[in-house]
Length: 195
Image (cartoon, rainbow, N blue to C red; front, side, top):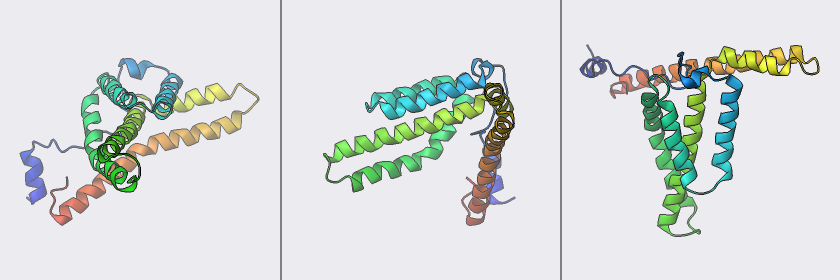
């Protein structure tokens, strides 16, 4: 057994991939909501994060999303996995604010600005991940078709757009799985234990 296999066995095979950006079937409150209501909520979260500049808006959204993830089976684990993957990007965003905004404000103000910006971006990703976790791509596609079809005879066009939506949201989990497999393969070849 190689080093990666021993490491995985020592962890008790907890190295299983956490289903980020994947629909999680269930009967929770969020799963039972209509897909278009969930999409409208996602758009409102995006608008709030971009329209309000105060530092407490992204922080509040991040905490509210953590509470919302609690309504999904395995949700907090997914949230923490997403946060763990985002830490390196957070460091890059803060470093960019420190290095590139050298004419504006003090060093502390630029660091706080970078932190707020990174929390805002993380909240956007967490909101998108939550939407994908609680929304079945087929239900979203059917809802979109039902919304658009009765109006103005756009049946064929709505069907094409609906199929496109279903394909996009259906293949996101496959893309993340393949990226995870690639990361594990590269990590194993380089001796990093596939993590």
